[in-house]
Length: 206
Image (cartoon, rainbow, N blue to C red; front, side):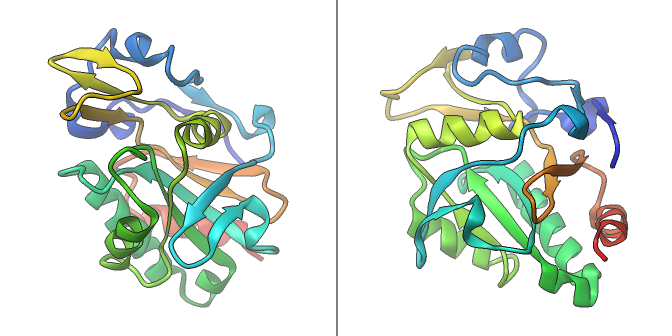
């Protein structure tokens, strides 16, 4: 268990374009707590989303398993592929303990991502990586539960659903570990790397 404090570039926004007031610009879309994420103050995880083969799933879909979670989207050019590769690297380094962990990549771009293309996307990185996507309301709910942040913009200005044909996506880049009781155990920053995260996660698993 630990208290995670914002590490600057490790919690940077996807695509690296959001500066200063961007967090405030998107606060109306998804309310979140940035900077300090304390497991002691986090509510148990709850969500309802969709997966390509399982259909609708909730946090109870994987009883007795740990959930290793990141958010992103399939058309992300840099940060999200790195995050997915890091998740794959963690699963590889966990060895036998990987059997107790389910890695979830949750889309925050349900207007372009589908359960099918998300499943194909995550499959490129690791066979156990699960892609989940929901409606706008479901996406907002899971982001709020994770205390993550995301939003959409066009020409440097925030836009909201219904979205225009062309828009950019911004999101925070933390990764999260939840226990079988769906209580938050730990939070990892972008740039922590798979070796460090795997070592920390392995210590949490009996």
